[in-house]
Amino acid sequence: MNENNLFFDIHEECGIFGIFGHPEAANLTYLGLYALQHRGQEGAGICSSDGSRLYLEKSLGLVAEIFNEKVLKNLQGHIAIGHNRYSTTGSSSLENVQPLMATYSLGSIAIAHNGNLIDIERLRGKLEKDGAIFQTTSDSEIILHLIARATDGGVHERVANAIRQVSGAFSILLMSETELIALRDPYGIRPLSLGQLNDSYIVASETCAFDLIGATYIRDVEPGEMLIINEGGIKSLKIFNSYKKAHCVFEFIYFARPDSYIFDHICVNTVRKELGRQLAREYPVDADIVIPVPDSGVPAALGYAEQSGIPFEFGLIRNHYVGRTFIEPKQSIRHFGVKIKLNPVREILKGKKVIVIDDSIVRGTTSKKIVKMIRELGEAKEVHMRISSPPAIGPCFYGIDTPTRQELIASSHKVEEIRKYITADSLGYLSIEGLKKIIPSSTNYCMACFNSKYPIEFESKKVSQIELFS
Image (cartoon, rainbow, N blue to C red; front, side, top):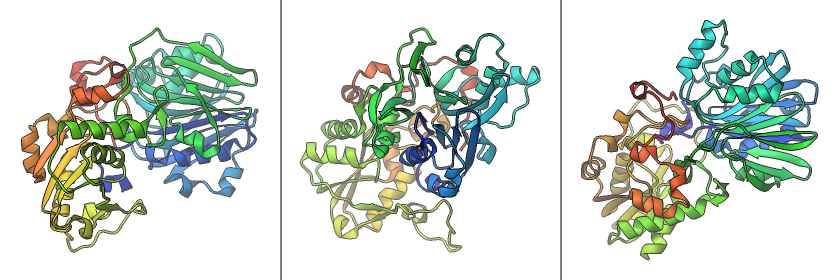
């Protein structure tokens, strides 16, 4: 069982990291993936090149479990790309762990992909009809087939032609024997940044990966842009016409690390604190303390506490060392699933009116267990739930593993009904209007999970059929 399944209802997507021009490319990629571990814990891989051939190592598990000194020594060369996987499309198996590598008429190529293609049935069906044999169930392999089957132009033309045939959310790293290519979908749904370490260039999902290795941020890879990095430097090609930006707003609410700067270099921690401040303005309540659901609820809880003047406390302690698997006792233990991750501090909570800040409510089952645990084990007098995002009413089709619409409690229940279900004394969600006040240039963001307005069109009959597998 993935450790996230013990507690959370929405799961991270994937993290990608690439570097060109460093003698320790694989080692730095390992560190970059370590910094991006929060984006995927199912599997990880690194592919490197010494200028003449590609080397690949990947496995199921966490980055630190997979890569050691011996494994990294096999990854030779000055170019490397890496990937942390949380499956969105494709089953949880080793063959789906990226990077994926293939050999075709122009040499070898490897891909690391963060996002989700929404037209995979059509594309895969067409390719299979034409004789393509797939080795994985990942949508990323479709891109490799499209590149390999192109007949006109060199590598760059073939890549551009292949990418123009797909639709969906994608931040992609491609690597040949001699160069690194970075691509971003025309809406810019998933983050992707360019950095530099001395004479080496780096591309990563989040800037926290730059910080760990001492690299500096240069700029974001633009939506619809293809960056080609080789011995000649960096070349930028715009491979799509201009589209309206649709950055994923949930990156700010939950997915990105608080110390990262994403989407035109905006600080995630600052945004989350301001979301908490806005939540306090919209839903004040007479209480003794404000506590977060750690870790993602911490910045918003700090903002709520500062705005309201109510003291902030860590009333829930998270166990950061939960393994990927655990042995559940045969005899039922009350609140066991939640207590694996969290435990209340009775000394802080006992007899108090408590405001609990979380980033979202998905199915409602986890929130219900947390409220009951605070009330029963923590002996709190009152429990007031505050959510630093609007009600989630729509699933994501762009690379985040979310439940179906029917499983999202807010899609079919009013706030008061949800409050009764989770047994809180009160419940308040941040409004969509409040979210837009805090997010810079909010018209450039996808908020489909809150308003069901999807930026990329697809057949309506497909909506109920598209499933994101975990």
